[in-house]
Image (cartoon, rainbow, N blue to C red; front, side):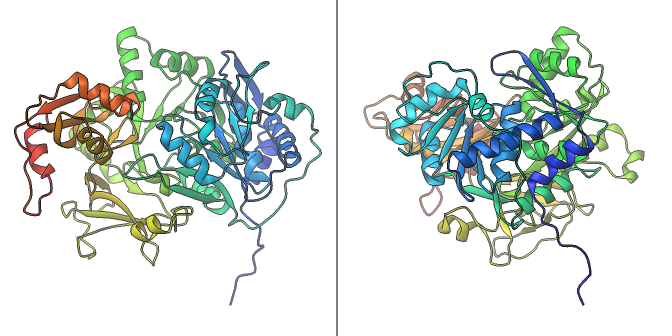
Length: 538
């Protein structure tokens, strides 16, 4: 027997419609790329999104078409989220911090029809234009009276497109499983892989992160996602904030400690979300300046492990810092390190030990650890295995990549995260290592193998290995260890300069160590466990 409940599709457009009707006077405030603060309401945003939807249709965008953005966190980017998905197209947010080859790959792989670009990134597009699809058209987002010669068709600026349309538009209804957004991973070995989110998965994720022990956004909050909107859909905040009627503050491109403090104080921000690197810089500014936060009470930190000392530093300021964990493939939230009632009696050190873990899974996320044979290990906080996850906002396949899908996803839906972890009896998960030797720096992945392959191409290098070393600011940084070719002497400056021609600055190793030989396993592989013992605590 089936229940007798109405079948209404879970669509992203309904979130903004709800916000416009029931929280219509609640503000969205953004610091524009040009500098001034932009201020309007959810009601205004929904009206402009309808204009934009009509403009997209007039430009020939059809359901299923990919429409890309290279943009900072501003009101225009927020409108693009809703207008693109609202007509059944796919919003493809591009991370401009990726290396050129990665951006070129994902634009071509996604077959983007339009590319909305903040003026900051127009030179980047001009540089990459010869390698992008010839039919990909560019829309400048900000004032741009004379855009540079890009080499691709440039359409009227964003505001001109909106001005040519009216608000007489009804959001269409369609299957909630329709694709809504596309985000690419930034780094294991090989090409980036696409996570294709649906309307259903996105709405369910927004519901889930609104739970009290997850991100817990309410109409009483003023929320600032410092995490950029180009990073995993801003961790779902652009959907959860209007769903719950929270005032939304978008920081634009200025993410330094002083700029964030000024914005938080001016807009009375109560809750902010970002990677540990951001919060380390923010806390350092507060410490150096003596500034005090008058409204800020909660922070969520994700992307890499949070140092317990940082949790304690913010606690002394009356600010709760909660750690979260997830992946692009998970929309992204999987766990949050919220305390339980029984923890109230614990001392400060014991509480910090719990808060230093990645946290408990939110409802909807299944989680287990397995050994090398795929057998499930006990949740005892000691047994370590590969972490597998599944759920309604976790991918069932990568976008147009059968090989990667087959390697990462089991037939019954379990996704191999590639992380090694433990899970204790209360459900708290802690990442202990990575199955692959990938370095996570400032919330972004760096491939050790890609760096090694490039280093070996240098004329002075015979063999190379890259390992992660802890860093108080970035979480991890790469260390390059090399042996010399006969008659050669590798030099740090020359090797870094060589790598700089192939990798962005933030991916470059912080140091280079030259050794006589690298340790090898019986099968001839470099023994990175030994290298970590020798050099991993530099």
